[in-house]
Amino acid sequence: MDSPSSTTRIAARSSMIDSIRGCGLSGMRIDKEDLRRKLSIPEYLRVAMSNAIRRKEGEPPADTCQSDVIVDGNGVQPPEAPMVVFINSRSGGRHGPELKERLQELMGKEQVFDLSEVKPHEFVQYGLACLEKLAELGDFCAKDTRQKMRIVVAGGDGTVGWVLGSVGELNKQGREPVPPVAIIPLGTGNDLSRSFGWGGSFPFAWKSAVKRTLQRASAGPICRLDSWHAVIQMPSGEVVDPPHSLKPTEDCALDQGLQIEGALPEKVNCYEGVFYNYFSI
Image (cartoon, rainbow, N blue to C red; front, side):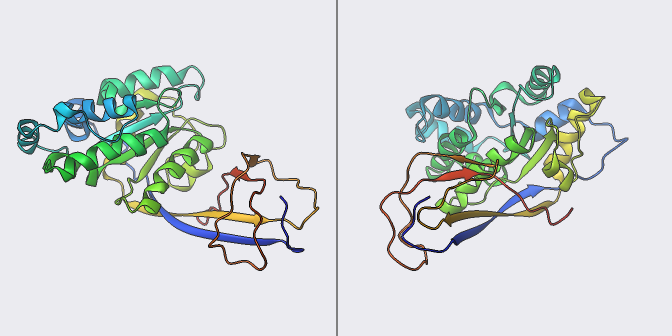
């Protein structure tokens, strides 16, 4: 990365992202219908969010914004713990597609997003924005659902980091609260999952474990995860050999507000990636 400076400088910004810590519920029988009622988002909101994501528009459909629909929405009881799941169905070997079907059975298809079809930033940009718009129009059910929203990620550390990075954008945009994130470990390392008490591997008796995981995610205590965005400037003429976690992206402009010495170049070579410091390990 070219720079007019002769020394390496690092500028960084920190933000806090919420994660849900797992808490034990072993031996407790969980009724499927009770769990569904606790987690299921009302149908008119599920459809509105799904359509907004499909159309890639944050505005809810016109028929959802009609006054009679809003009034009807105000008569709907919001769920106790509204939740959506992002699943990397290619993870977990042959269990990935089966787990997706099981989650859809427990929660409904509109609340389970396959990452090969819906990206987490699309959910943030369009799905949550749709809820926020309905709340602005006076829909109390939409407002309560947005306030209480929780997210479960079924995947490895890379998938979890992807989702955390996407929901972390809500902090920058002032769109709070940021939904906390729970984990179903489907990767190989699963360090984030271990760190927050969700285990290091996909359970053998996974069909019964899924209900327990969703119950834990709905009621588990919220912990804080410190997330950093670092910008590193290399001395001019230096050969850049980035670590494996950093991948080159398109040329980009530097933030003119960065506190560094000297003039900033108009364009620089940029690298992006995810890395963590697990203070609990």
